[in-house]
Structure formats: C-alpha cells, structure tokens
Figure 1 (tube, rainbow, N blue to C red):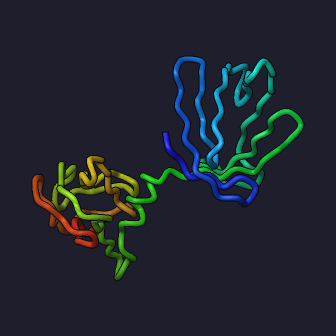
Figure 2: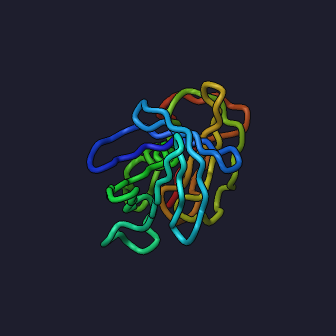
Length: 172
C-alpha cells in the first residue's frame, strides 16, 4: 500500500507491505523489515534486528471523531504526529471541479480508457462513492463523487477514451 505521510511536518512517501507477521516498509527512501504483533487496541510490539520496540497508535488529540489519517504514534520513548493520505483518494477528490451552483464535475485526471461506469443518471450518490473507473498506464483509478447528491449527467461510457480534464460526470 502506498501512502503520503507527513511526519512531524516533513512530507515523505510511505510504502507498506505485509506478509503474515512480517512488515516491509519504505519511509522516505529508508527500508525497514519488521516483525509486528498486535498486543492490544492500538498497541504493537515491533521486532527489528533483534531489538523489540513498543509502539502505540492513536488519534491525534483534537482530531475530529472519525477523522482519518491524523495520528499520534509512539515508538519507545519518542512520539510523532503523523498525517496519512491515500494518493488514490486524492486523485478522485482532486479530479472534481469546484462546486458551481451546487454542481460538481468529476474530471479525468489523465488520458485513459473508461473501464466501468458504476452509476446511472438520476441515481443518488454519497460523497466518496465511486462513480467511474478509468484505466491509465495499466492502473485502474476509481473516480469518486466529491459530494452527496444526484448524478445529473454522465458523459462517460465503458470503452470510451478520455483526455485529461474531460468531464465524465456531473453531480448536483
């Protein structure tokens, strides 16, 4: 899983892969291989190079209830403020144009091919609900509704090619 992380104000790329109890991570270009074992709610024991580290993960103080990504991470005696964002979700949210008169446009983030259309015109959608799947550079990207509302217009059809910036759907 690839994520964007901001650790104590420093932005870094984060990639994490899990295989059983082993965790392989790359944080800002540095690679780690750990044994991870959950010992309680938000509590883990991490083993690396024969050393054991106690790790606690919880919501950042003052974070909104249910707010994703804003964490307080303690490893041993050190504490870190960590903000995680998923670049896939950013693509879907960033692909939407600003709301004009209660309308939001879902735009193609890059040239590609429409693989699936997951909604119909007139259908009610929730904020964050996938609307269209576009394949670009051999990767499928779910473009999500930036707001709750109704699908006013669909301009995408499965199999059609799209250019960056093409409006694929309008949500009212």
